[in-house]
Length: 316
Ligand SMILES: [Zn+2]
Image 1: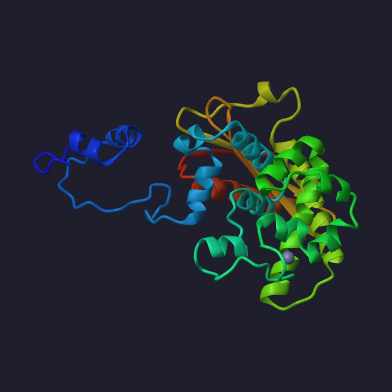
Image 2: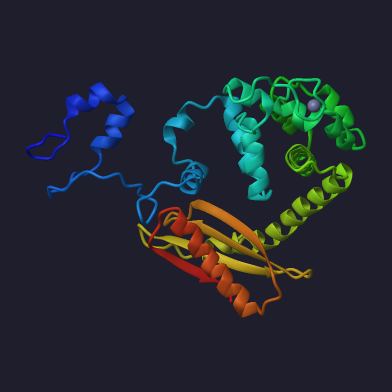
């Protein structure tokens, strides 16, 4: 900035940043007060960056530059991973696998953290993401007994992203979710074996993971079908919030087995979806308490995304 009037020094900015960054920097209004500069991360109340906020911004697609650099395959992978009602933790695991960020020996060797990339389980192959999830001996215990054994033989295996992209075109969404839950279980068992020296029954673990993931889909659908306004009269009943505010429709679903599904769907003043989210909590609550928890959950989600003004609508 110019020292005298505290306005942007455009020519200096262009020597330091890309054109896109310069454009964004110069869109920031400068303060009329002569204050010392300080770092401030705007989505956080205290101005401190956290991975959680970065993740949620990325999840919302606010990273325009990153978006503009995506290939068609990247966009398809993004859609396959995030446009689903799978548990967020599973999607995050899948996304990390696609990005090559799962901590396997191949990655550790590449980063000069491990002296070699040999698999910590079988000690006979390079431990890539695909090796850890599909090819290692303990992983084969899961896959060889499943109905995915043939398709996995045919699937390209140069990277997890390539494998997933191919599988997503061959399998229906439920099959794909089941396969990804099994891959997640494989990863869980692998970590237990390497880091806790625990030998689990991988098939038993896989059955549990698949059941939990498919249950999640079931209660998420029950919550979302109510709060997302899937019925035809929704458009005429839904009142837009004023410009600058968002509207959160929340609902709770009381499941039979002592669980409660909390759902929130947030839209802007055009009615465009900003984010939908759902979480499962254990408990046996009265309806009014569950609805109150859904309201609190919806508000927590939008506050986490940096919104400060919202209407909240509950059916209760
Ligand atoms: Zn191995």
